[in-house]
Length: 412
Image 1 (tube, rainbow, N blue to C red):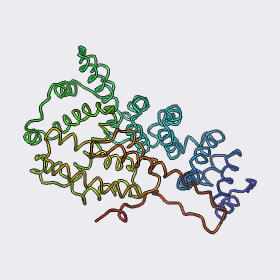
Image 2: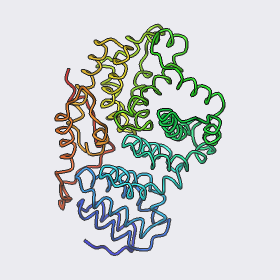
Image 3: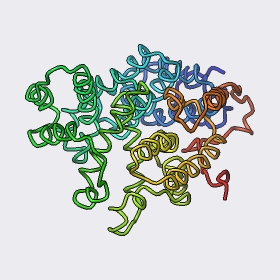
Image 4: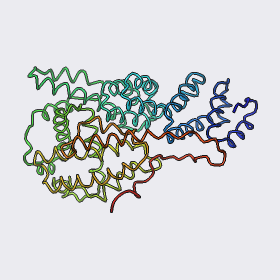
């Protein structure tokens, strides 16, 4: 359906009355024509493009969705630059899912060049890079973004830590590898390299001490004395342990932080926060509520973190149990709560977006056969491709959240 663009009101009326398939072609037709900034605003073209992308993704029309972004980039570069944050996250996600680092790097370029245009979306993209263990791409983004974000008055203070922490983690892994190879370490040289990313002498002294400590005794007393430092030390030890499963510090620290976010969000009495078996204990109801807010909230941008939390719990709790920081019942309760929520999440659409959980080696509590069957279920979420409707009366309404609520699926 072609419509010559002569009057924005006429075009908008035709678009409103059109089927989804017709709308797709109307958008391509109008994008191919010269458009002034005033016309772009009158048509609310950015919102129409975002809505169309969501519609295409909901029907697993990923190739047309990405083609539309590239068509926009080619024909309306100014509009593309205004809307890239709401569009290119799909290109990054799909490239990571297909294990195509070159395409992921190409899709990252606007986030690298303009991280503060939509800082929340930039952090979302960074989360995907971390969970997919795309360390080189994550570091590239963070090196470019950190100084811009740290100096931007429009960004909340400490947001830059999301970027500096990735660079720190990548260097900590290099330190770990040098220690394992019994190579001499130049701690002052490391500090000099990381000074541009917020590290100071106090940070370095704490890191040196963390690498030198190797006992898990009296964790309760240490939590009572300084809970934050103790949890940071445990995070480092977890990252070290996960290298045995070919997982980088960047990815394992992201998993730890996803679980830590849940721990810290609970309202616990002070005494329970210093006792391992109460601090690390997981209530199934509390976990369900927390994950539902991340995955099912209309305005949430934490879906990947919510999924990583649920799939990450077995790794974290195996680590804690193996070092006798928690008792077996606490581990079993945590695994049961995570397993229950996994069953809920597996009912949701677009599972392919979270296939990063199958780039991780399965935890001990999941057999290779179970992991393979689950990965196949994630892949099937892309198998059913629905054509765009040509019926003007049965258009699928646009939804702000593709996942919806977990509530109907969670077992009581």
